[in-house]
Image (cartoon, rainbow, N blue to C red; front, side):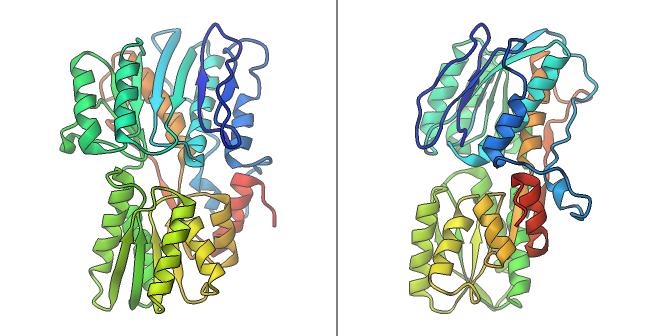
Length: 380
């Protein structure tokens, strides 16, 4: 999997340290030999070797992720841009965002605009690490700094400080720090409805359980806005139904292994556990593994987030009931478009909105095969 990369000018390539499978990719300079097909390489890395063409009989499922984006009608004021994007943690979810970033960069290159960028994150979520990255980026003259906020309380003061110093800072991806939070960031591109995603998935689970039963909640990382918002949406829905109860809430730190271990504990402690609500891309995988291993896939209903191939396989086979799939590609694509306008000096308004909302589509078993075809070329 690709986890980090840098696009730099005046260098044909730059090799970054290897870790796990691959945590860096060398991206060549726009306009030089060897750059063709970069977007397709990233698509293979994020979604598998053969991302299939959209199928006409997929009944809208393929629209959950739109790979057919084109730049909006806007003429950039500069010929060159230099952006810095940092996100919460090395994870395949952000590889899919990077696919959209790279495709937008390629399309700008086609109209004679060179965009260099850095897209980096730590191996584990750390608000303090993110703060340090933001301070370091502020010393390097980037046109725009983008951040996927790891913790609103910790990161917001730093964003505000950089804004006061004259830096152009935006937020992107899945976690915003809003004006209501006291954040002065210029704009946000990404999921603006994480609370509703958590509520919608939980409502689907409740209906499946006929509004009766004990459930457990796997959240992710403490303080991460998207995880906490989904968890709050889930809790508020469960609170509506007197015969439903959340028996435990656990923070798995977006780790499949930790989600698996927590689920094992839930299953051992609650023999009548009826459901699991999963608030990030990793925990549906860990939860499903534990439930299947325990032989309780017919007893425990699992709902969760996103497009992990293993999770989609469990959805297709009936071990997961529903997944909320975010359009990560469009998040990355639109982040670049907004960053260009911010760099050109435009504030939110006619040129772009303060919040660019990207969609989430809830996929059930009957749509799982189509989603696997769309993202991974999986025809089984």
